Image (cartoon, rainbow, N blue to C red; front, side):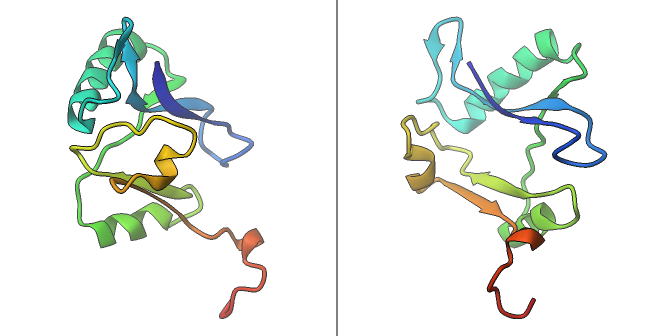
Length: 123
């Protein structure tokens, strides 16, 4: 079982339709969500190279290790970037309907879209 996001050209201009892989929760019936992100990512990279890299519509999301402030600004720059999820490398995958929102080890950061800036000062 994989975690990812479908991105369509009609949603993000000049980005080809693709399924971007972020994480893996199960492999061959074995649960991985209680493993660290580092271990899950290693398994996901192996599976991607062996089975999924042959399909151009499936991409492995980039994983970067830079300072938090630089990463935040990089993730909201430009028209193609809408945000980022920051995860601690030792974090487990939070399972449940609201666990990702309440996890102290994950932080989802999204930029404010121009069409949503209603009532925002300085705009």
